[in-house]
Image 1: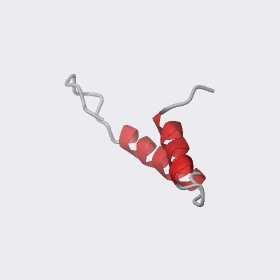
Image 2 (image 1 turned 180 degrees about the horizontal axis):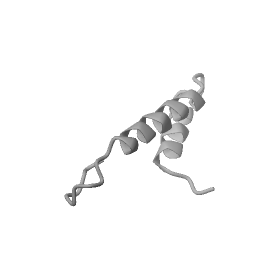
Image 3 (image 1 turned 90 degrees about the vertical axis):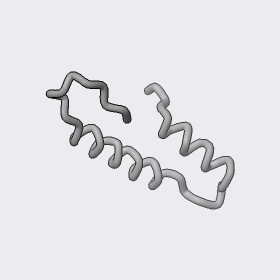
Image 4 (image 1 turned 45 degrees about the horizontal axis):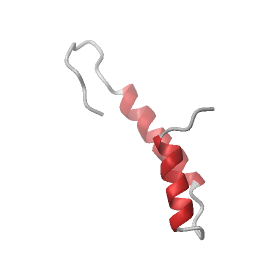
Length: 50
């Protein structure tokens, strides 16, 4: 599977704070991204910044 920005953030956190579990952060960030995508209005032709 290809790695994405969230995977990189988790890797960075694991390197900086090995005492913390970064897996939960990945779950939360992916859920937030899903919510943001779900609320986008694709009927407008204008570009929507993410």
